[in-house]
Image (cartoon, rainbow, N blue to C red):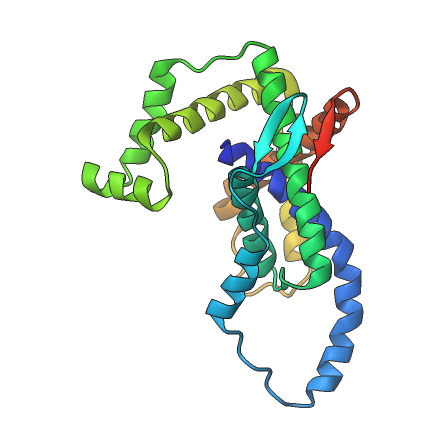
Length: 250
């Protein structure tokens, strides 16, 4: 599973879906406040919520889509769905409602289709990941853990084998090459970063808690670079869809 790329695509789709629901949420906000009349809502039972989230998943061997002859199965769908559910939960939305659950299913399928189309394009162009590049990233990951035992426990907790992790890293290496050479994302200028900062800080009064521009400019530049990459990636997916053979099974 190409989780780095999938995270990008899920992010694009989640932001899109959130924007679609934003106006409706605002309209309902006033009604909710009026109904509350000072009464606290019942606390959500985490176990009950998890049961509802798990109920949206499918059997691991179920074919959920076919893209240019490649089958996408339930285990991939469930991983992507979990990511989408977490995104919307973090934004204060309930992914277990009937309406949002249906939308999440559709958007999760679209993210998987997009991921598959991009990886097929990367393979078509002949990108390869050298063993030294894979091992370099692997060593960087291992450095976050005290020892090999702790690292192996982390693999186990994520239901990953070392070979599967190295395969994911290889996909990430190839993806990075593709973004650099084919997507040709425009460089973020200092002017764009400053305008981004001014826009973010103009909504409220400046206080001691407001970060200084010099302290956050590198982070803001990274964020803007990510946004531009996502825009290019989304456009490329739409282009590839025009000639792709796609069957959705859910």
